[in-house]
Picture 1 (cartoon, rainbow, N blue to C red):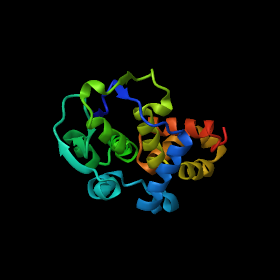
Picture 2: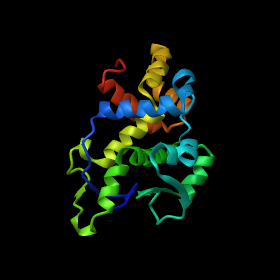
Picture 3: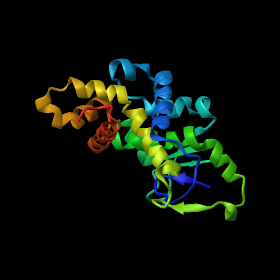
Picture 4: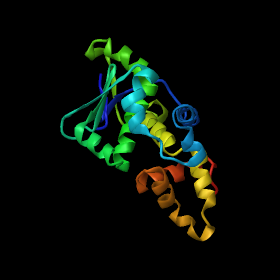
Length: 202
């Protein structure tokens, strides 16, 4: 059983609510990058994965040439990142940072479940089309949610958002993107989610 960024069918995983994932992501930020919370420094996802992943969850980190369209893959005890993504990480590319945070989420949230699936015969593992599962049981939704919360912690986004004058509030995603080294689209999605959660005022 492999989970990677181009996957269209996924196994059902243990349900996790958005608030639970937010809590787990915050724990990681608090332990590995407190300056992200205190000084709004970008979360060092590259350094955490390359140098601390095994200590965090028993998963090794590797870079390799993966099949076309596959940016990262988590299989068994190894997280493999496409060499093109790794090169982009060295340039601090926002999209590559989110890709790695997404794969980090699989390691942190799904390793034990995938270990069980990998121990079974392939025919026994039931896969579901994305969209057929409830989001909270979809490993890809969980991973995206975790990645957004790690790279853009709620309290940090709120502090940035509240510091912007009302007249400039429509530009809030750009402020968040520039400060936390994420893409503009990722910042827009995160702000929308935090408004739905009533962390941010409309």
